[in-house]
Image 1 (cartoon, rainbow, N blue to C red):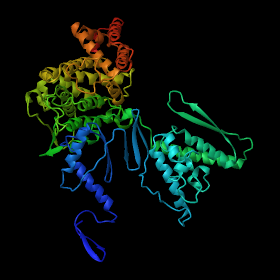
Image 2 (tube, rainbow, N blue to C red):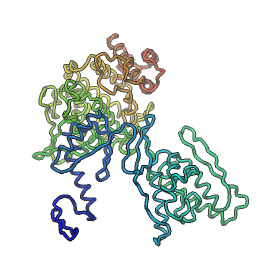
Image 3 (cartoon, helix red, strand yellow):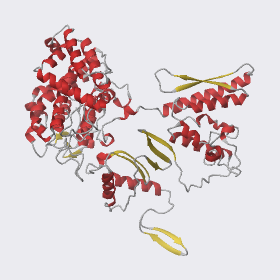
Image 4 (cartoon, one colour):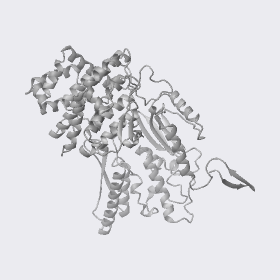
Length: 635
């Protein structure tokens, strides 16, 4: 790195900085160098701007960032990176809220949707290869194939792909010079596949999009028919319940010879095989399934990822990443005992805890509201003064200690220490013994929950609204422990409510009451259901004067959910808790809990369900119940 020599104009030079020009390892070294910078200055808990980075992609020295913050904050972020000069890197940037290019991709936001298409610099000469050159035939045929494949991967719109590929007659001359006919002397691809040999353009218009690219089906039907001189008949069939169409292609087989039938069969079999390979390798994933907690990829997933001192793992629950790490580890260690039918353990009933914590972080509820948003503040620091952070502590540390007490970490070679906060230490317990002195019942409930899933020989699927007896048992144990944590947290955290606005404080208590209703129904808390249920929780801390359903920057659904939660708490308080007793009475049977779960789901998803109607339904459910609250408690 310091002794790279080269000759230029009969003069020898020694390069004293950077990587040797032209060396095969230059790209690898550059990647490693920038990665070291990222982990030192970007992906660190000390970076106050990390919370605003919603997406970070890099190719060598080109970076794409989705920024959830102000333009001024982004400029400060880049400035802070450029002021870090010990690695001699300097960043330039381009900001655009609607349209920006990254490498060969143009990213656009149109009507709330993110769309991508191919991008070429205006100065691109597009000089690739003369078709008349003496390169091997497979090299020549690979070039258009690769170009089409690149466009198929990049374009999110079929129409834009066809335009950029030069498939339409109108755009052929305009676009084909860029892709399809750039090989001088080579016929355009859409005129036939003879010159492409066995490349068989089946995959050119279909790559990883399932049946959501109708054009490729038409193209392939025409291709099969053309090979035997027949005309295809193409019919489009709408799939019930789906937002796509499937093409059903048929050929007029009257005069087709057996040889031609074999040709069709072989090519169709190859087409089906290619589709299966591509569909399996590149599944279409619902965007809803991407709603992991913020910074999830940076969260520790093993105990050894934390700081280890003197053979003890030190966990700081007042750092967002480390508190979230306790949840992530609980998900991992309970995975063998809970359902694994979905990828990434998403049926695990413990998902409700990290997803709720992630919502609190994303909406700024874990910080001291008196200093929130100050420049240079570490956004991953959890404030001891936060009411939400205090309440969540008892739903993070105590469950984690309960899992340790139940033996889930048996055999781990190090001790585990929970760090104390700098202030208000008497409000928080940090060990099994200390938490037992706070509330032995709470520790016993969490220990019992983890012991119950470890001894279960059945696995939970947790769907809404009907549950099996095993699912009911697991969720009942979870919610009982959950409510004990809240019961012990409420009096210890109540003095922090004065740090909040009146509207936010009321919402906090509304939510705490709502959780009691949710818990009584044994509501499932897996990944998807929890994400769906908390979709319309407020996206920011409520300010003075915010009053649902009249908060202007909230959606109709967000306003409705807030108003419903407030009315529910208000009605329960006015009746001296009688409404909750009625609800628990209605939830004492399996049928009642199923109806309750359905009602709770409709509270979030049904815009026509008025708050007053919900209270009437609760009363009717209680009237029709065949058992009482005491019996429910015994169950």
